[in-house]
Image (tube, rainbow, N blue to C red):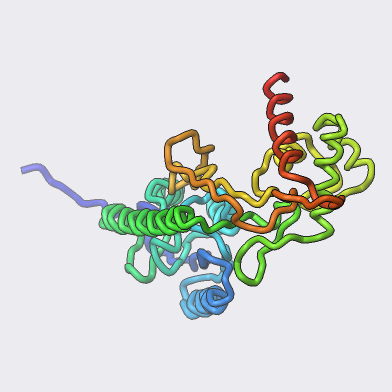
Length: 322
């Protein structure tokens, strides 16, 4: 019979450190709420405070920092600055262990979540999900994470579909909404409908007047910039595309074409121009016009509908010719 002598392991598989040594692990927390609404603020602050105290209460953990993202969705890691900073710090050797509330707090995109965890695991860094009691160095961690991440992703899909259904129902009912921060001439009124902002409306009418006097879109943009007229976004320099969008937007004559774009991928929130893939709705007289549909004799401050129609047609033709 051969003589077999077992040589015991001396290093941790994942930490690559001697088993007899138990150095304090550099530990960071991660907190995130997926909305910036006021009712979520307390939860956000509570998460940061909780994980600060939680990490400091462990003698074998050395508190590093609680990284956080407020008002950011977990579907993608691209815009999560706190999350990305934390991963970079871990891969640089500044963090040994990341503690977070749950799989859904870490990531709701299965691919992003598992890719990040595997990258950390390969480099010798661990993540602990408190709610599910999952340690990524555990042999069962990979299977449990795949299941939990998939469930979290399906929950996000369901929420996205419900939101989309609600939006399309509002479109079908003719309810108009705008991105008011970037829309010159209107603000949200007390009744929820677009309300004319008089000073901004003057700029809109000025743009139409310049175009009907024979100026090109490029010339209008240069003139507005030279005169110091602020853009819809409050900037100093006007772009040709901004002027074009104002001249070709039906909302300025009181109508609204709804669902011009739609979301293609709920994970990446990618949108595309609606070219017939989903229904569109055209609502006439949906709100107060800036380029008035009708103008009585002697009215000098409002545009008649005929001029608006000519402007819309002319600007489209000029761009097609170019």
